[in-house]
Length: 168
Image (cartoon, rainbow, N blue to C red; front, side, top):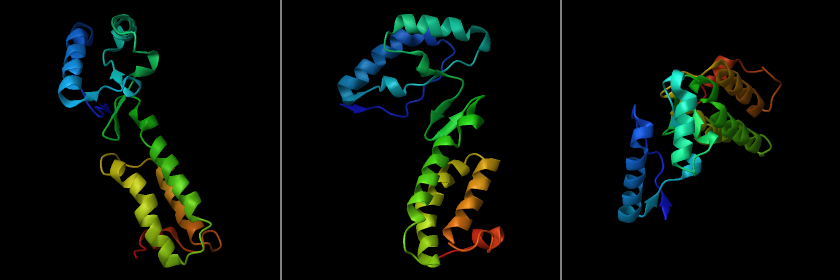
């Protein structure tokens, strides 16, 4: 079976609807051969007054749910939504961005080739999220750092504005 990823359900009555939702998931599994990946299931309880009660009731209804399933935000299609979303929005994207920079740094390439690979491999890690959410200060700082280290020249030898405008 494959997983039915990026399914988002919104209801003010999660506890009351849980049994019905489980039945729907079983039907989807039979019809489409897709199952719900419980490890990646995210439940965002919006009503702060009842968070603990709802968590407890839902975990009693389904033994597969853990505290890790309950967050103060959800990530859907790569974008975090909710009160704690800004703290988590860029974490994975910046990690992937830095991995690409670490991969590109030692390669014996000229500036033009390095810029092309940066645009294709590194910048794309951030651009999707940036099309929905304004980059925070850490993202701006990381991209400026990456521009400088990829030139392989003295640090800050090229102004940031010049490096941001480089195209291949």
